[in-house]
Length: 187
Image (tube, rainbow, N blue to C red):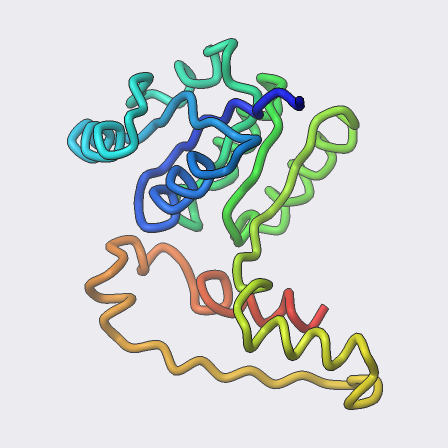
């Protein structure tokens, strides 16, 4: 029997809560700590998923020796510092896409990660498992359409996503928030 990976989730918005739910349902994972700036959200999610260890300060979560890995589910613009701190603390990291919104930050994190080969650093691209993306990928992989030489993507996202659903939309861009999925598929 493999030991469960003990995970701390930081950022309990839409994606953060999904990570907590999914990890708690996985037989090889256990959410042992959660972190969010809002104590109200922290307690709502903690109570809903029976997670007793809760932090409003990320450094306190990182100091928890029971945490093996950290899932960074903060807004797009707020990935760099938590990923950097988690790597420095010796934790494995799964970061929600986009990895960062600044190339210089991504380069720094990659250099750090490469100096720590025993630590895992991953970026989550959840659209890889959406039916349309998966079937497109498989069609290309099988050679059904020949070798692609260009790509085109169009998003029909409703305005309420950036005006009502996420309150930090002004701090990201469509290429970071939405286009990252299409770039990932094309790559």
